[in-house]
Length: 210
Image (cartoon, rainbow, N blue to C red; front, side):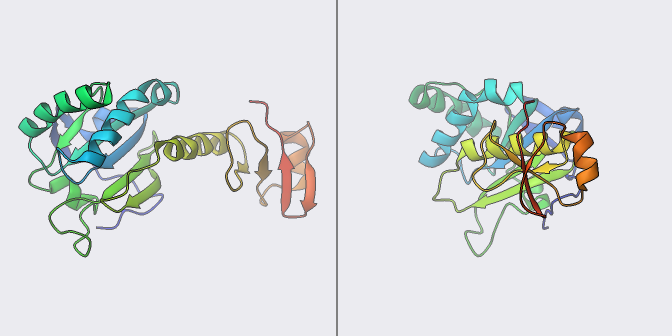
């Protein structure tokens, strides 16, 4: 199955390291980062899960819940948790789905047979409070993810949901943004009374203070 932007994230029931969940119910009104890792007790995944645990305050202030997944068993997850705490300095503080039967990974297209049919690739899904998929990423099993980029995209999505703007290349929070072309200059005067810079009729830069 191919998960596309804008579609409702499929619901499912699963066992996790923090108990049984129904995904949509667990997500509630939060944003969600759902991400898969190829296998327990692997080096790159160990660093990624430790980083996700360290970033919990950043996820919390954005109203985001993190949840991981691998095609290993719940017993493996529990044992691996101790290794993550020891080597990364942070114990897991978010659930990890045990998907030994590949029910969830198949539902979300996390197994790419041409890459490795036995494990999931490093997929990431950012899901909004309406359960819509807003961002997808797929990394090869050998490359660790950039979680700073995941946070940056969430910041962009949340900002552009509040204002009729888009964020330019390499944008970081606090930098100026672009007024979307669907907003006329007359509408922009009401929405952006601070004014803006016009480089081209379709390229209008504005500073947002909130």
